[in-house]
Amino acid sequence: MQAVYYIGLGIWIAFMDVFTGHHRSLDSIFKYQEIQIKEVHGRAVMAAFILNALTGSLGLWKIVQRTKQCLDFTITAHFLHMLCCWLYNGHLPSQPSVWLLHLVTITLMCVLGEYLCMRTEMQNIPVMSSKVDL
Image (tube, rainbow, N blue to C red; front, side, top):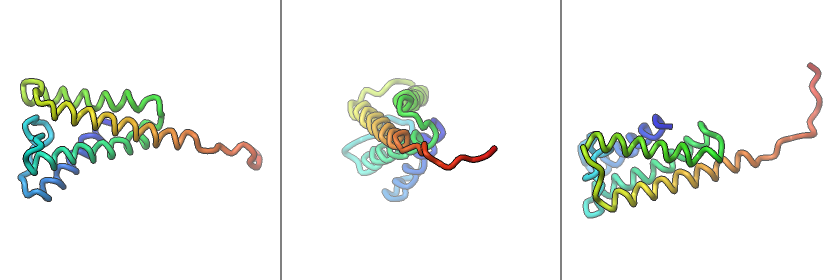
């Protein structure tokens, strides 16, 4: 799931960087200061994180495939991302917008992933099918 998280985030941020005309850098993924509501690029990075939550929920649906495990995989992916950001920056974020963004993305990724997995788990399993001779 971590690979899906970072590949999706990289693609979304690269798309947003092209859209805003900003140069591509790992800072957009790992640097807390890039997440700013007042700047166009900061809002684009925030949008990329939110869109990546949707991508991550598709990853939960296709890879994890279990409703009960969606929260675990979501928290683990975001915890490891925050750990990488902490190592990259040397400190935890002090901006409330960073914490709020991660809370929103965790919620979106988990709830949508659980919804998709639950729909798959609740599909009818055919019981009355023709017998196959083995």
